[in-house]
Length: 145
Figure 1 (cartoon, helix red, strand yellow):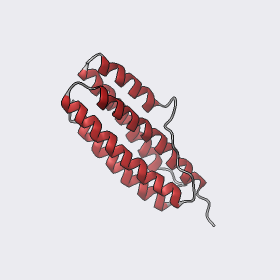
Figure 2 (cartoon, rainbow, N blue to C red):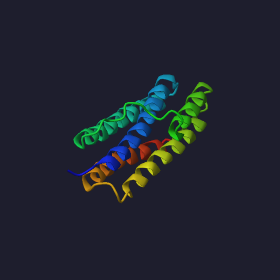
Figure 3 (cartoon, one colour):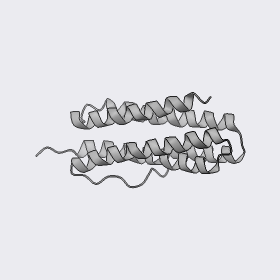
C-alpha cells in the first residue's frame, strides 16, 4: 500500500492557509461599509470554503484526517488581522492593497505545492483545480483596485 503522508501534509498545509483566508474574508465582509467590498469579500469566503472542502475530500480519499483549523501565526492570518483594522479605519485603498498581498501569498503557496515532486498525480490534480479557483478569485480582487 502506498504511503500518502507527504500528500496529506501538503494538502493540510493548504487547508490551514485557505481557512485563514475564509475567516479573514468573513470578518471583512461583516465589517466592511462599502457594499461592493462587502459583496466581494462574501463571495471570496464562499469560494474559499469550496476550495477547503475539495482539499479535505482529497485528504480523506488518501486515508488522512483533514485539517480543521487555520494557521495561528501564518502570513495569511496576519494579513487578515491587518485587513480588519484597516476596514475599521475605513481606508478602502489600504484594504485592497492588503487583500492583494494576501492573495499573492496564497497563490504562491499553491504554486509551490504544485511543484512538489513527491506529491501523487491525483493530489496534484486536486491542487491544480483548487489553484485555478484561488487564482480566479484573486483576479476578481485585483480588479477592484
